[in-house]
Amino acid sequence: MTDVTHEPQLVPLNGIFADDYSQLLIPVMSDDTLAVVAEKIAHHSEGKRVRKRDKAKVVYHEGRKVPMHLTVAEAGIGPLDHVRVDYED
Picture 1 (cartoon, rainbow, N blue to C red):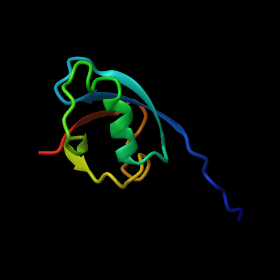
Picture 2 (picture 1 turned 45 degrees about the horizontal axis):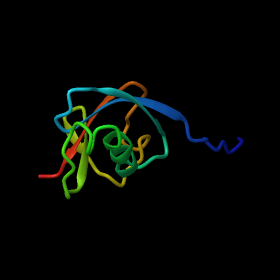
Picture 3 (picture 1 turned 180 degrees about the vertical axis):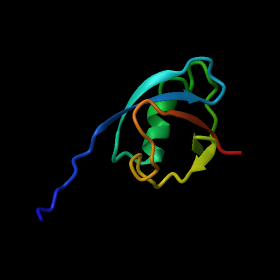
């Protein structure tokens, strides 16, 4: 049996940041951590339509808070899934 190395894959996500009114299609990679995903999604809203706060960000997928050290693939997040990024309480 041959050892197959899986290359990172592009995973387009439907993402929204905090209380922004606009959901966006955000391209991320399957090996991005959720911390990276949070920054990629926040980039489009934070300081523009959502006030920037000095707080850590968290990612929610299917109603659950996802550990920020996991990758997109490890968290089971797939193409066109909806994720919400918000500030930690």
